[in-house]
Image 1: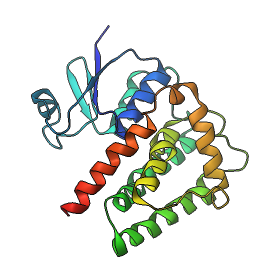
Image 2: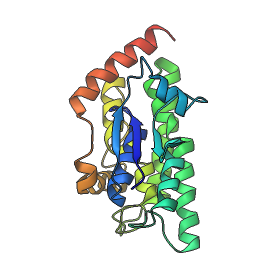
Image 3: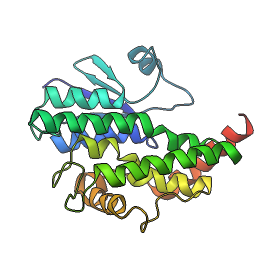
Image 4: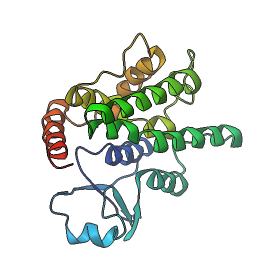
Length: 221
């Protein structure tokens, strides 16, 4: 069997995207925790362009960027598919994955900012959540694609666990259940999937870590 290694970090939702996909598809792998303040030569060798995690190494060949890794896993291990077989539904899924990639960072920008700038990113984040609530999720759908978890759910996975941490640390409330009932229900459904539930970082530890990160970012803009 060709060896699969994953270089990641315990606070990174992008690392967890890959972990979830590997687990859902039943792919054996070895996880390597990276020290992001002192990146090892191997990580820099595998990802010389961006020097970031996650990096999946399959048979000695590195693949970088979480959603590209997930596409690679889907194509290399077709069992337990995470994308629809129907071409139209597959295109719809890819549309929402692209939306998550383009709009998701507004939440992180809100975390990194304060004052008027934070208000700007808060507004953009609320617009993103409104779009998801009204256009991507339905009352009759447990997940983005229906009754089964898919790559779209994984793409939005950070909002299921990390968003609450960001809200607490940044002192901003975005995801109110009465305003976003579908999205709130999706979070509950997503986090009850055993593979997801068993592979989430400790929330209290994340709050402490993210507080230190935010203080550092605001001290040295």
